[in-house]
Amino acid sequence: MLKKERQAYILHQVNLHNKVVSATLSAEIAVSEDTIRRDLQELSETGKLVKVHGGALSAAFYDNPVMESNVYAQTDKQRIGNKAASLVKDGMFILTGGGTTVLEFARCLPSSLKATFISGSIPAISEYMNHPNIEIIVLGDKLSKTSRITVGADAVNRIKNIKADLCILGINAIDTENGVTDNDWDVVQIKQQMIASSHKTICLTISEKINTVQPIHVCGLDKIDSLITELDPGHKLLKPFKDAGITIL
Amino acid sequence: MLKKERQAYILHQVNLHNKVVSATLSAEIAVSEDTIRRDLQELSETGKLVKVHGGALSAAFYDNPVMESNVYAQTDKQRIGNKAASLVKDGMFILTGGGTTVLEFARCLPSSLKATFISGSIPAISEYMNHPNIEIIVLGDKLSKTSRITVGADAVNRIKNIKADLCILGINAIDTENGVTDNDWDVVQIKQQMIASSHKTICLTISEKINTVQPIHVCGLDKIDSLITELDPGHKLLKPFKDAGITIL
DNA sequence: ATAAAACTTGCATTAAAACGCAAAATCAAA
DNA sequence: TTTGATTTTGCGTTTTAATGCAAGTTTTAT
Image 1 (cartoon, rainbow over the protein chains, first blue to last red):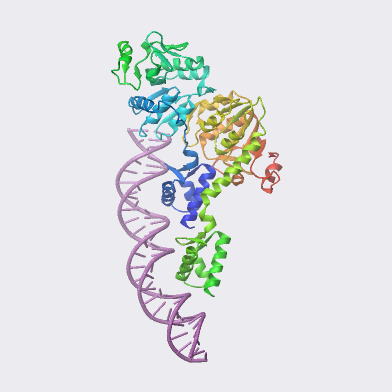
Image 2 (image 1 turned 60 degrees about the vertical axis):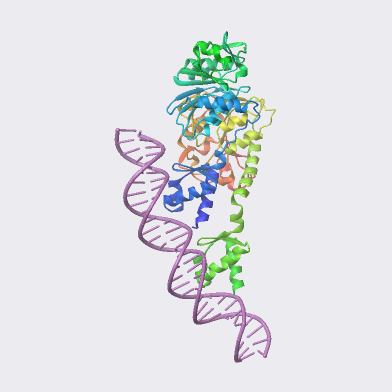
C-alpha cells in the first residue's frame, strides 16, 4: 500500500468515525505503529486531523470557533480575565458561572494549566474545551436561554456536594450597602450555592457595575474574598470595598 | 509496445484502480521500472495523474479528496438531518447524543418547533440554543474531550429517570450481525441508557458506516425503530435492515 | 506509586528515485 | 533499403525516502 493511499485511508476513517486509534490502524493496514504515528504526525501538520495520545481526532470536530466579538468592553474584560487567570494554580477545583467576563477569563487561561472546572455555562464550557489539560465537569439541569447557564434544584444540589478551591463569578451589580445583587432569580440560586461551596470567592466585574443595584440579593460583601475590575487596585472607586476587607486586584 | 500505447495503458489502469505500482506495471508491460518511472513522470507533468513514491495515484482521487468529500458528506448529512427533523413533533421529549450528524439534525429543526431536548453534547446544545422555542435539559457529568459529550454514572442515572418519546443517535457503525457498535466505552454507556429510556430509537448514519464494525457493542437491531441515511429508502444496501423490522427513512 | 502503553529518537535496512551513459530502437530522408 | 539523427530504453551508481526496530522517555491509567 502506498504511503499517500494509506494516509487517505486514515483521513477517511477519521472523518467517518471522528477518531482513530493507532493500534487499530496498524492492524488494519498491516504496518507498524511507528509508521501510523508518522502518518498521523504528517496529517496533523497539515491540519487534516488532530493528533492525540494513542491516535487522532477529526479536525472538523475539534476546532470550535466560539463567537463573541462585539463586546464593547473587550480590552477591559481581557485585563480582568488576565488578573483572574493568575489566581488559578495547577490542581485546583474551580466553580465558575457564566457571562462575558468569565468567558474572557477562560480565554486568558494558559494552555499548560491542569485544573478542574465545574460550570453550567455552555459558552464557558465551550471555551474550556479548547484547553487541552483542563478537566470539565458540566452541571446539568434546565438551560436558561437568557443566561445560557443551567439552573434549577438539580444543579444547586449538585453544587452542594462540592467543595471547590475557587468560585469565579461575573457579577451584575455590587455596592457597599447591598453587596452583590442580580436580576435573575434562577441564576442567583446557583451563584449563592457556588459561593457557599467554595473556599474562596472571586468576583469579576467591569467598574461600570460598581455602585449599582439589582433587585435580587446574592450575598453580602463579607462573602467575597477578591474583587477584580479593569481598574488599578488603588483606584478610589474601590476603596470602600478594600475597607470592607476584600482583596482588590 | 509503443510508448504512447504504454502510457495509455497506465492511464487506463490508474483511472480504473485509483492507483498503480511501478513494480507491478514493470512486470505487466515487461519494461524496466525506469521506463515506468519516466512514463509516470511525463503523465504527472501533464496532470493526468499524481506521482508518488512507489507508483502513482489518480489525479481525481488525489486532487480533491478532502474538500470534495467533505462537502459531499455535508449535503448527505443535511439530507439525513431533514429526514430526522420531520419526525419531531411539538410537545415531544427527545434524548439526543452528539456527533456531526446529530448536529446537522439540530440545524434542520424548524424554529417554530416547541419540544424539549435532553442532551449532554455541548455542540448539540449550542445548536439547540439557537432555536427559540426549544427547551433544553443539559445532562451533567464529566465532559469527554474527544466526543464533547458528558459521560459517567451520573449522566447515566439521570437518563434512567427519563422516559422520552424519541432517542436520536448518530451511530458509528452498524451491521446486521453485530447491530450498532462504537469505539468509545463511556459514550456507549450513555447511548445504551438513552435507548432504554426512550419509546422510539432513531439511528442516523451516512451510508458509508453501514456494514462496518467497531469494537464495542451498543445494541442489537431489535432495539432500533428507524434508520435514517442519505440514501433512498429502497436502496438495496438497506434491505437487510428493513427485513429486520426497522423502518427505513 | 507503579506498571503499562504510547511516544521520541536514532539507526539499519530495504525499496525507490535520480542521473549519466551507452545500447537499442525508431524515424526521416536519400 | 540504407544511413544518420533522434528518441527511447536499460543498467550501473549514487541519493533519497520509507519503514521497522531498539533504547530511553513521557504519558496514562491503575
